[in-house]
Image 1: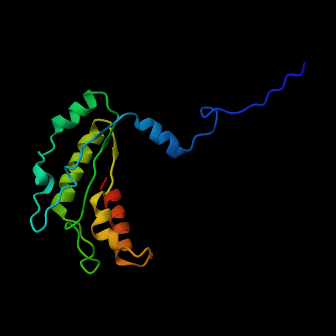
Image 2: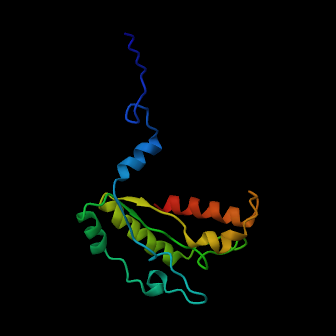
Image 3: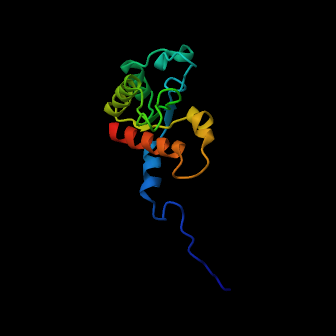
Length: 150
C-alpha cells in the first residue's frame, strides 16, 4: 500500500500581511450610520441633518461596553468642501466635530473605519479617471487632510 501526503498550508499557517492582521484585530464592528453622511441642499445642519441625534461620548462608551472592537464613522463632504481654487478647504466646524467623535472612539480603544460615502455619487461621480482631474485631486486632498487630523 502506498500512502502519499502533501502538505497544504491552512490559512493560519500562511504568512499574514499587516493589512490582514489589522482587519482581524478590528474584530466585531458597529456602524454609526448616516450621522456624518447626511447633507441637504443649501442648508447644512451637520450631523443632525436627516434627523440624526448628536453623537455623545456615552454612545461611544455604550458601543465599547456592548463588546464591539471597531466602529464605522462614514463622512460625506458633498457641499462641505471647496474647489481647488479655494484650496479644497473642508468645512472646519464639521471636520473639528468629526475629529472629536473619532477621538472619543480612539480613547475607548476602538478601531475606527473612516470612509467618504455619498461623495461617490455626487461630485466624485464626474471624475474622468484621470489623475490630473480636479475630482481626483480633491479626493487625494481629503484623504491627506483627514489622515493628518487623526
